[in-house]
Length: 93
Image (cartoon, rainbow, N blue to C red; front, side, top):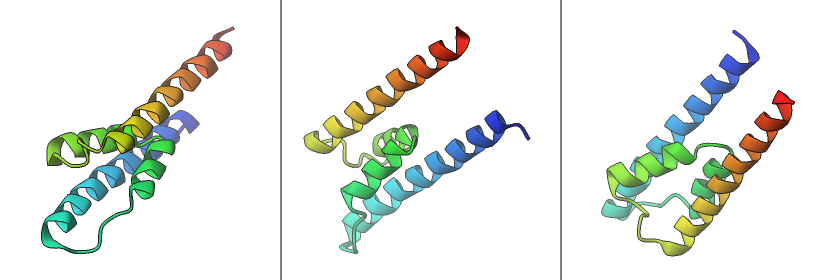
């Protein structure tokens, strides 16, 4: 397994964990159980699992109306996209 394949596998696993966490938090919200803190969801985003958070939010209809959380989510996600593009561009030259 190459380093790129290993990184892709790690990101895939992290996004799956974020997606499952969103589903578990939605279930907890409906049943009165202990919730997942928003800072944990943002930590997933910072670590590269924005796709899992976004997909989980859309599928479970969870946290999509929390303006503050979504603003932070999109700020982090856009910053990661720009950073990745900059690193990739620099590697090409």
